[in-house]
Length: 168
Length: 168
DNA sequence: CAACGAGTGTTTGGTCCCGAACAATATTTC
DNA sequence: GAAATATTGTTCGGGACCAAACACTCGTTG
Image (tube, rainbow over all chains, first blue to last red; front, side, top):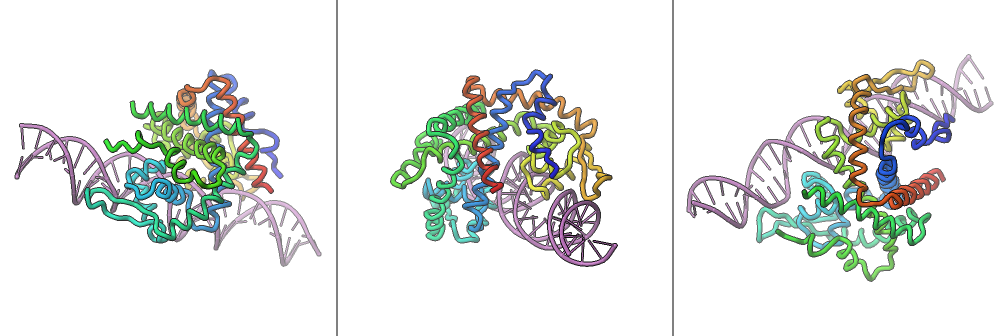
């Protein structure tokens, strides 16, 4: 038992190390906790729901996007899933090998490629997504309804702010 | 201008597609916005601060951990950075090739390996981190002080809840 | 209608990333 | 103190990931 974690938290170590500097600590804790929470949640969902499906996190997200939006252009799927278009090509190759999605050329514009779920892909999402949502509920169990809504709305502000900044 | 984004948001599409199902939407929006915000922030920081340093996000996080904690065992660094120990081996190999970090065997226990920043690694963090913090402040600019603290504290609850669950 | 510019998805090269198998070392157990 | 067990970092295989280069297609402009 080394115990470094029980003795000193990261936030304490940061205070020791950076206490003298002129930094925006509120911003720092807000941002770093977003990242920590995101990693912890992803890890939790991978270990529980995705565990035995053979799907990776990104594979699931891509299928989720196609499921929600229906037949989609790859460009749209990549943006919605938050990955680069080159990455999507590889992910779709994997998902196609599982027969969960299908690529089809768009006859109206031969540059474009459409993506759809196969029947077994659709079936998978129908059984997987409720389990996924159940674990999402578990994740925020410690927050009451108001805190959940505040959390979502604060994060929406952050995302919108960054999207506006990116466009500029 | 395809405009699918201006016409229909993801949240609307989800409402259309999943409106009939018995799901915990509050949990869903809280969790999915954590993930979206995290990805947007990481992307923003990569594009601004890390842009011309040659450092990846993970490389930066690893150096940050070693900077904050001082000379550390790899096991500790991996956990703190939120990556697998096998991943850390590769990342350290990259950072060592840049001469930013250094590996040293622990004489007391020859299984263990200690990591330290080199002088140039230390110098890099001293100049990089204030810039990083400045962008963190930009990220949460739309939130007032109270919302920033609430955000951090809600996320801390989520992380702690998941850490407890993982141990069980 | 030819040439140019913009918009597609794919390929490529290098890194990240995990889980599992592994070799080396330390600790426990008898 | 020898054998069994546990711990630590590395290696390996396969997938994810991005930026940049690419090939192809469409729209526009002269």
